[in-house]
Image 1 (tube, rainbow, N blue to C red):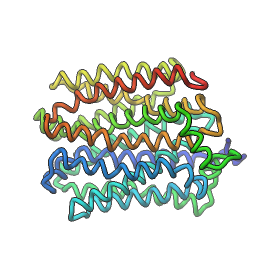
Image 2: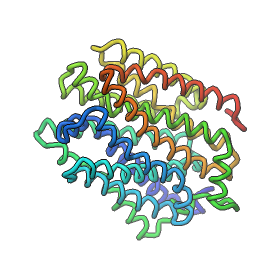
Image 3: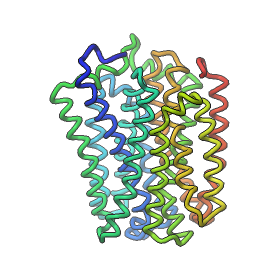
Image 4: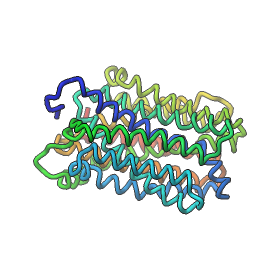
Length: 395
C-alpha cells in the first residue's frame, strides 16, 4: 500500500491535510470545556442537563463507526473528508446561532458524525504508511495542538469581552479551512488520499464483519473508548472543576486546561522516541503508570498545578500507540475496517463518559469527577494486559 509511484513532491499535501484535519477536530472539541459554564448559564442548565450535549453526539459517533470504511471505499477518502468537514462546520454554526437548547442538542449528532468520520478516515490513511511509527505520533500531536488552542482561544476571547456564541463563530471559521483544503485536493485530482484506501479482494462490508468477530478489534475499540472518554472528560470538565468547585480564577483555570492539552501535545511529538526506546507495548505501560500518578494528584492535591499537564503527557501515547499496533495484531486485509471501527467507536467514549461524570457530579458535587477517572484508568490497564497476551501478532 504505497503512493502508487507518484513523485515525492506532492506527498506533503496529503500529510498537510491530515494534520490540519486533526487540528480542526481538536479545536472543535477542546473549546467546549471553557465555554461549558457560559452555556449552562445561558440556557439555565445543571451539570446533569448540560450532558445532553454529549449524549446527542453518540448517534453521530455510532453512525461513523459503522459507515466510515464503507463510505471511504465507495466515495474515496477525500470526498468523505469533504462531507465530514462540511458537517462539522455546520454543527459549530448551529452552536453559535441556536436560540433554543434543543436545537443545540440536536446539532451534537451532526458534530459527532463529522468528528467520527474525520478521525476514522485520517487514522486509516496514516496507519497504512510505512512511516506510521513516526507519523501516527505526529498526527495525534497535531490534534493536541488543536485541543490546546481551543481552550486558549476561548479563554482569550471571553476575557476580551466576546460571548460564547461569538467564540463558536471563530471556531467554525477555523474548521471551515479544512473544507477549502479538501475541496482543492479534489478539484486538482490529488489521488493519494483516495488510492490508499483498502485494496483487498473482499468488500469493505465483509472486512467490517470479519473485524467485528475478532476480539482483538472489539477490545481495542473498548480500550480506546475508555481512553477517549477520560481524555474528553478531563478536557470538558477540568475548567468547571477548577473554577467552580475549587475557586481557581477563571483565566488561570482556562489556561490550566490548555496546559493539560500542552502536556498531551508534547508527549505526542516525542512519541517516536519512546516507541524506539520502549516499544509500543512498553510505552503504553509506562503511560498508564504515569496516568495513575497524575489522576491521584489531581484528586487529592487541590492547589497544585502539575497534575493536569502530567495527565495530558501520560495520555499522549496511549491512543496513537494502540492504533499503531493494530496492523501488527491483525491480518492486513482487516486493518482498514478495524482501524475505522476502533477509532470511530472510541469517539463514543467522548460522549458517554463526560455525560456519566456530569450526572454523578450533579448529586455528588464536581469534586467527584477527578476520583471517577481512576477506576476507568484501571479498566484500561486490564484491557491493555489482555491485548498483550492474546493478540494474534502481539508486540
